[in-house]
Image (cartoon, rainbow, N blue to C red):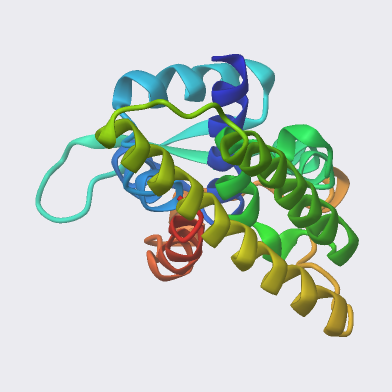
Length: 216
């Protein structure tokens, strides 16, 4: 549970790093990022936002609703401390970045990740899946027809992901290194309001989420 919460919080910081968002738009983009297999509820999102607020990594800004409504809504934006934390976390290529709960999210932010970190995560993920594949292939038989089909389906799914990861690893090794998009350090990032930023654009996150879905 703690691992999932940490992954969600990092995803929130990554999206807010691009632009301030209100809760509805943030949830919509997170669902695109996390994929169809993990539908995020407000019951998970708002506790995560409260934890980030307490940590000082995001802040709330009150903005007027568009159109004729006079209702005000809360817009969340990342703080300089939040940018610093996000920049530190996405350099981690250790085992936690390879796991099912984290990999899709980390992959979605690969454009902000250095090449050696990307390669470490991809190789770690492949090795983890290969271990899983070896165990499944050597599992004892004796299942009925439907359990055997379920095992076969699982093995084929993992094999497809291993092939996909191998292609990505080969591409990373053969492509000249390009610097990741810079993550603004805490000392140089002025705070922004929702009015400064304007309406959020779905295009960037949608494309990242589409790539992330391929791993699920």
